[in-house]
Image 1 (cartoon, one colour):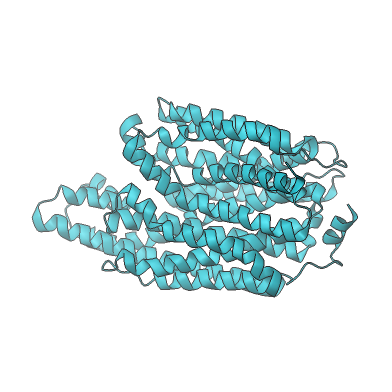
Image 2 (cartoon, one colour):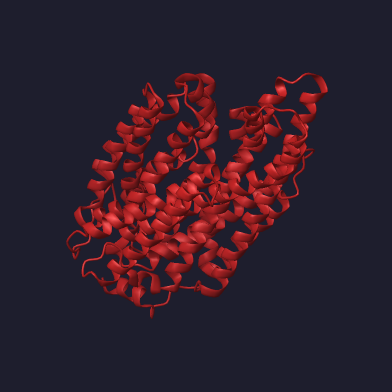
Amino acid sequence: MTGGRRRWATLTVLCVTLLLISLDNTILNVALPSVVRALGATSSQLQWIVDAYAIVFAGLLLTLGALGDRVGRKWVFMGGLVVFGAGSALAAWSPTPDRLTAARAVMGVGAAALMPCTLSILTNVFTAEHDRARAIGIWSGTAGLGVAIGPILGGFLLVHYWWGSVFLINVPIALAGLVAAAFLVPNSRNPNSKRADPVGTILSMVGLGALLWAIIEAPNRTWTSPPILAAFVGAVVVICAFVVWERHVDHPMLPMRFFANRRYSAAIASLALVLFALLGLFFLVTQYLQFCLGFSPLRTGLGLAPIALVLLVAAPSSVILARRFGTKPVVAGGLLLIAIGLGLLSHTTVHTTYRDCIPWFALIGTGVGLTMAPSTESVMGSLPRDDAGVGSATSDTSMQIGGALGVGVLGTVLNFRYQAFMTPLLAHQAIPAGIDKLILGSLGGALAVAQHLPGSAGTALAQAARRSFVSGMDLGFLVAAAVVALAGLIVLVALPNRASQEDPVASSTEAV
């Protein structure tokens, strides 16, 4: 196999692995009702089945990205495949919710090893800027596609198999990836890597873990509850200690000089805020399609297909546009399309049909596709290749935090508006406390109660709950649109249109 063909074969292995990781961010959502029926999981247990993966994933990204730079990215990548496959098998055959939560945490360890390695290996294989930009366009399209088609694949598997199939499908893909990686993926590492930074490792894991826990738990416990406030304060203190330590230690896991580069910092911020909007959108829309429009899990997944399809086309195309017009107008234009799409979706009513939403879904998918690849290229192109693992891990961590914030913040906005509308309606009704909590807790709970009420009373409750939910969802879309608009302003002010040879970090790339 020639060098050029081998590089693209390597990219194929990396993208298939990335697809596996991205799918797992969303594929479980449609299987949760089946897990409840099969394992008897409570609402709290369901939350941790989902969140254990995200917390471990984000908490270990920086650590394992730095480990790949130091000991060899191929070995960490292959180790990640083994751990991810093993965790998937354990999850598929878990007999209890606690076992499933532990297995999801194991999968998070594997994903944290894999995710930064895919991008750092890519950066070291495609050294020419033109080829690297094309490869990152394909990589970004794959990442977005995985998030979007997760619900579709999950719904299909649940129609034909049992709930464990959403995990078991990972095992043969991980095995095939392991064999392919042994032959097709070259090894690389930072020849000038310094000794390990155990203090930085512990601080980053504790700080990010506390931050993610607080974000994820806040919608359930309220943002002002003592445990959430304590976790936020603790996270801020530990992350500040991490920054101070990394600035003064002579062998930092994450060199703080990277953030002095405007191209790097602005691109990191734009990626985080795009994922804030995208995952927040999925969180709201999947509930809307099932509870308000009556879609099945499979049909719900298919309903998100317009986002996936246009994203798949737009991400590689964004590289061509960025090369011709520069990074800034393409990324800013993509963010504008996302903000417009979210703004139009905020006019949804209980009478809106799925067809009415399709153009706005396509607009958002196009915007995400235009934004992710040039922003990722800006991050990776502004760093020395030897530090690709840490750079990739920082980018991935920002996206995980952005996505968790999107779900947490928009979920809170939704709940606040929903409860504000429903509470006065229930105030003068003789409803037992437990039933009242169920109705105010979620639209799903209210619809379950409505099914057991006689005649017009059940119909009236269901209609009121759906109207309240849609009102909260619309407010969430407006918040997401404002956040994306803020990202657009950051890009216009801070993101350079082209890479500068005078930039200190970029120039160090030339020196490597």
